[in-house]
Image (cartoon, rainbow, N blue to C red; front, side, top):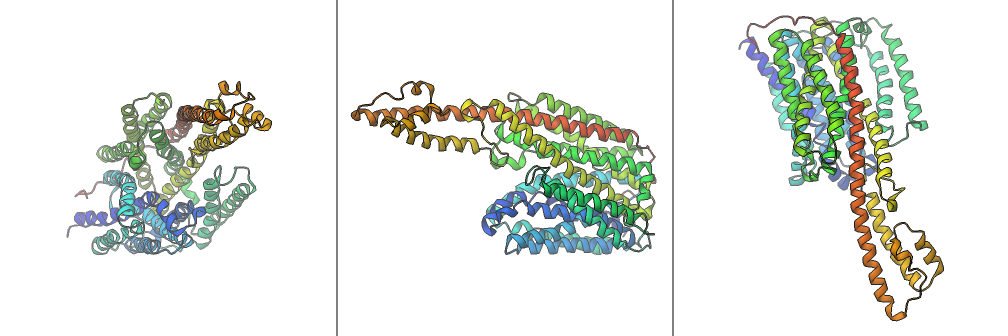
Length: 564
């Protein structure tokens, strides 16, 4: 078998593994309500996703370093096995606690897959040809984000939520076969020892930091002692991590990589683009579903236009980099285009904005997001020594993941505070002071329903002449003003039933009017909050563009005689 064909078939196995890891970040979301209904433990709802995030983020730099020290085929094989073991155990989970634990194991395998796969591409494919492969790598993520929610709902509805995890087994088995059959057993690029102390101290600062960012503004206030304690632990752990890495002869994370300007500026840019990427994708469905009326049934498809644009942008940028041998021009073009789209979203989003215009802007924004997936990793791999390929490649993924988590937390706080302020400004007088929650946007409407029952009970007492009930109705903002003028007037016993019926009809009409006013206020509040999110997101893009300007533009090395 020719070398080119062997590399191509190896990449089939690598991409199948990456597809599985990317798919599991989205496929579980649609199954979670059914999982909670069967296993209970609703208080651990968020931990099913958080445990995966923690484990995968920590695994990326650790397995990236191992990719420099162990044969890539062996490491990739074990990464897939760990992921499949976590998948099988998650599908068999008898309780919510067990599922959280097994999802952590699955995240460990998923993070390992990301780190090792990027390194394998760097070792097998010359940089000049690598652009096309990195573009396809980004496209796999896009396809997984499209397929995941739909497939998760399909399996949950027609089989069982457990099949959300079992579906990984046959695909993973095919990936293992391709890796074992076609991937060459190349020797590791480095013969150094693994830095165990660095791995331990890495966990000591990344886990508290990610927990603080995940809980901040939702589970705990940012100034809560728990939050402050987690940030303190993260800062202390980071200081200890740097101290260890500067003293061990063969560090897990070689801090001297920051002396390389390509690595330094690419990592900084990826940190901010990771934050911008999540802000573009995470919050927009709220506007599309609540304001533009896309049904909850099709909510998993709300980001399809943006994802398709990102796939096209990723593939196109990779092709252009391979053809021209340069990457910076395409980075800058994508960054500027993305910045313009964030600003356009900030200006264009409104109640009356046509849906077709929003979808068009989503495709356009995806075109700007796409180049960020392949080109920064390509630039770093082109600039570092092959012996540090795994460490450098996984570090770029690590910084992007940390940026995504930070961006989601900060912009989520911006969205929540903006929404709370806007909803209070736009609500009708009868609903002032309502505590609207993003997790429960119908809270005020339910309060109206409860107020109807309470008010009717007061009306019955007022008709009987109860002075306390009459006073309470006069102070009740829900009670129509035209009826307040009639309070205190005696009602003949024969007319009490008729009066109560008339009042009940007026109150129900008032209720329906308040619901319409509340929906209009909620829609307007969502529009204002989303616009602010995109304005802050544009700031992240601008910072990423700033660091990209300083990125050296080196020519991509090498061209394989038979492109894989």
